[in-house]
Amino acid sequence: MKKSFLNKRELVGKTLEQMLIPCFYTALTTIIAFASLGVSEIKPVIDFGKMMVAGIFFAFIFSFLLFSIFMLASSDKVNESKDFSKGITVKFSSFTESFGNYIFLFAFILFAISILGISKLTVENRFIDYFKPTTEIYKGMELLDTRLGGTAPLDIVIDAPQDWKTEDDFGFEDDFGFEDDFGFEDEAIEDGYWWNTVSLDRLEEIHDYIDSIDEIGKVLSVASGIKVARELNDGEPLSELDLALVKNMLPEDIKENLLSSYISKDENQVRISARVIESARGLNRNQLLNEISETLVSKHGLDPEQFRLTGLSRFI
Image (cartoon, rainbow, N blue to C red):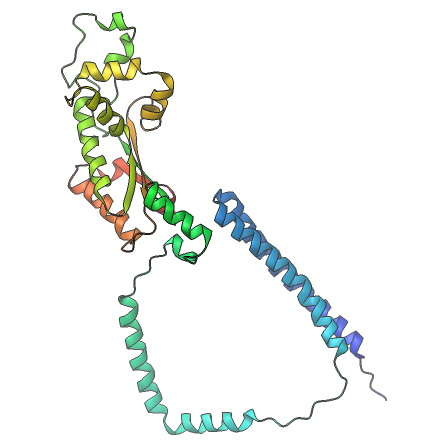
């Protein structure tokens, strides 16, 4: 009985049929994964996701087209060339059998050296290092660092202590009814935790500490506005009455920029907005964030649950 064989076109078709479905789902899931980067709202990340989606799509299409074309265009002649790799593999096998103990010893030494090296390894990916110094992106980020106070935002959100009392701990009482004359009867007395001289002095200390870090550029907070008000007050510290006047008599646009962006409406949460200098050569982002957290707890008396670090610098 004569045995039948498939011709070349049938063999190629059967091969593609078996490969198409698993390769399609592999490419599809990878495309979906990279497409999800579009929700990051970070333009370089979104562009990277688009490039990868396009690359995988065209790689899938051209791989199957070119594979089938080359297979059909190849010669039907059986290649009977000599296997030159056989001698090399035989020599390696003989060497392994003869010096097996030395190979194990060498592998163990190499493993020990690798473990030692891994323990000393530190990794810090500066976003600016993804680009060459000659590119426009690198020059632009360097300009932001040197002229505009930093690139990657870092926000420090600080809440009021859980056990703080809403009582009048600062001795400011309305015994004379002056608040009625200014039209802020409710707001002048019922301030939150942060809008008083004691808490603002504490916030200013934290602000100055963040501003003193070499890897940190521009720093903004409520303390920035208080410093401006102090300069307008001939360098004299603001009193509780001054704070009430500042809060209630500022124009809305100035109040939005100086206060509302950095303190909550109930005045129980403040935000310090800083920018990390990406081009700083000594930048170790993880060490920087840990140092800030430890200092806020040890030197400024904040509870670990009372504040959090957020912003792009936290997740790069």
